[in-house]
Amino acid sequence: MDKPTVSVAILGQTYKINCPKGHEADLKEAADYLNNQMREIKAGGKIVGLEKIAVMAALNITHDMLSNQKYARSNEQQLRELTSQLDAALTHQTKLVNE
Image (cartoon, rainbow, N blue to C red; front, side, top):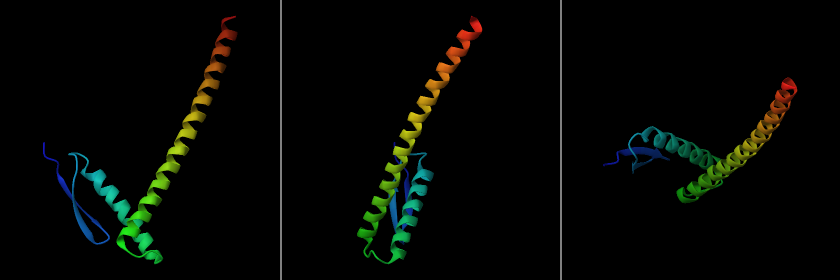
């Protein structure tokens, strides 16, 4: 099965990337996000060179992703604790009603 080729532009360079069928829009969205991150870094003027800009963008994006994962895990734990408390309260309430 052939994978479609998607053209994306990042800092004025066009890249043709093979992509699983049905994920073309996701790839374009990711490329647009990366392009915007790299443009912001380039506009800051402190980092020169495409490779260094790309590495900084990758580090920033990775940091954001890891922070979001930690936040999600924290929320999942809080949700489990609240669900446990709710289950205990409902069990207690059901016992009171049945007595």
